[in-house]
Length: 251
Length: 356
Image (cartoon, rainbow over all chains, first blue to last red; front, side, top):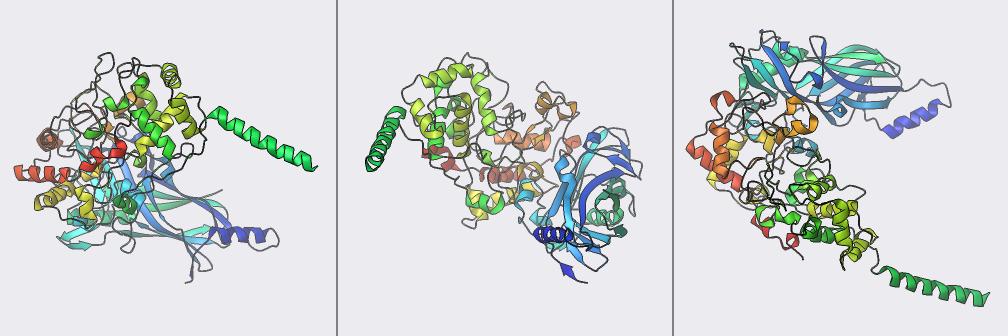
């Protein structure tokens, strides 16, 4: 499969050519990110107020949700793989982060597949390399393998007495033992698309999945200190395999 | 024709000369960048300098003079520097600062450094100011601080012999106004940069920390021990603050609503901006209300003193146990590490002292 780098200036040149002949049109696409709890939309307006119930029956509220995606790549029917540069730290409390790219111009074709990395892969998860992430307190401690967080999900759950207790569901590289680490990012591959006209791609995260499948997550047991907990980190990875889906809206 | 040209040239020279005589000093400010510490250069985005208030040698010098200028206060007795002492990392060693009328506030003066790297651009403990320039407007007219009016402050400066010329040199006009005053103050405040502590030198490979300091750093970064890094920086974030607002478990109810007073959102009640952990050796007392006189008090708070409330941050995850319950040795090591973030030269930098 041929992999090409897309330069915006080149794409604009394609658009210019289109006006002069009958060649196929470029495809203009935007990518947004949305979150839901088993289908019910979740936004920052829900923080601290809306109660969700996880698979285990724990009632919880969310006060923070941030996660990172990288290497967003679109594939078309000609076999082209077009990787969008950069990464996106999604922060539900900042609307500006809920859009990865706006009106990016892609070469003509039918786009059938989108892939991305939840977090950073090993090659990109470089200690201290991204200054914007450094000031966002996104670094993952060196003692746990370094690099960056993949997700921070925080809030309160009701314990068995109904009292609110804090939780911090933070995900990143898994520490097997001191000095031994295991990659923990997720390669997301979503196909079955058919995009050949200007569209918005909505990458959807079902937050409930983080607590559901295959590991039913008991917040009474796993609520904090999870960064150093190898088993918890790997369970997060397993549960994260089916967190993402995609919707396409034709503009 | 030849005569006309000579006449024109002569007239031009005459006019130019007259212009110089009327306006005093020329307006040719020298733009200057900030002196960015090496560790910032490696790890942080470029500092924020607003396009409409570039740093200039003249603007910074004027801002420094104004920072130490008591004419800004209602009775001409109090300057910014009277609550933001250089030797205290530009905070006040008094728990609450005293205004010109003897009024006492309810918050400890915030230390002032590295403000150009506050990318959230929310200033004060409660985030009510949205730029450094905006922040500088407040204290002059605050009735419990300098208790002046801006027209009066500006008139006082305008009536002096030297300020009109200094404003002309910095901003191209000798007519002073509040915007220019705050622009100059902001330019000076952006130069108050601290990024050369023992820990910075350690990160740069220039010195070795003690075992106690190194263990303290590990406690700081350990989610099961100090877990300080989620709000207070790390070896990746040398600001040692997230510049975000948190309820860190000080009280079960709130007399001071903090951020909530600004946003009118009950979910923000009792939240205050995380201060930087740099220069703690000089910036006691601690917390927004200066309730803790010593660094030991602060560490004890996070170790055993957390109190739950409606808006407590989930990162205070051990609140049910009162805190993270550090051992005596771990507390001592954590304190040693925290003090390695202090920079004596910052408090004595001659460029930051009173020029008046």
